[in-house]
Length: 286
Image 1 (cartoon, rainbow, N blue to C red):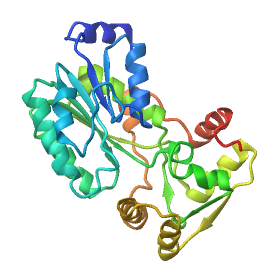
Image 2 (cartoon, one colour):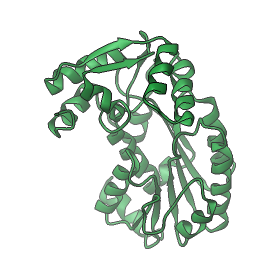
Image 3 (spheres, helix red, strand yellow):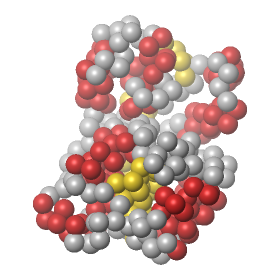
Image 4 (cartoon, rainbow, N blue to C red):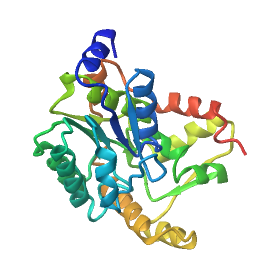
């Protein structure tokens, strides 16, 4: 973000905070850090925040929106789960009614259910931007695949489908630009990495970067569900993962898009670069 853009932001009511929902999560934490470094006031929307925010408790929404001028919206656990679109609609209506001018939504690429929430923003009357992201690189280091990597085996029903993994750092860069620069208003950015690889190739890349022995095992859908049941994964997350691996990861998202280039004027980060950076943090060390 250049100096002129920062000055524009500071001249447009920047004394009001930007609410970052999921502000302690993979993308929200990075968005909040970047906004803070720009000298912009930030309000973290999370269950542990100074003003607690909980998607399952609408009574927490209004206090979090007080005097807010923009919101980064990330829905937990995913926009594909039942009831997500209704929650987004209720929150967005409340935000607009309370004077919020700009909304940026983190959406899921290839998820038809998520598009219902996208339409809510598009019809809200606010200045909106939608970030339709592919599978996060950080799922291997900050989410449910981390335990598999540490255990030496990534076991998934992904077959030979390729995915253009997107780095959460890139998502955060685009989100901050969308929250602070007028040229992103009304834009829908599909965000992918620069190349599509299989989960087996991703695992091999992580093994090379970390110096660990990590293999990939392809499971049937039934084997995957059985594994989740043995691990006592809650039913709602089993349903979500089942949906992601049987419908979303069917090849529909294998093609690349230019969302990062259009938003930032540069190429997205490669998965190999992500793996080297993550390995350097020690996250994959035992």
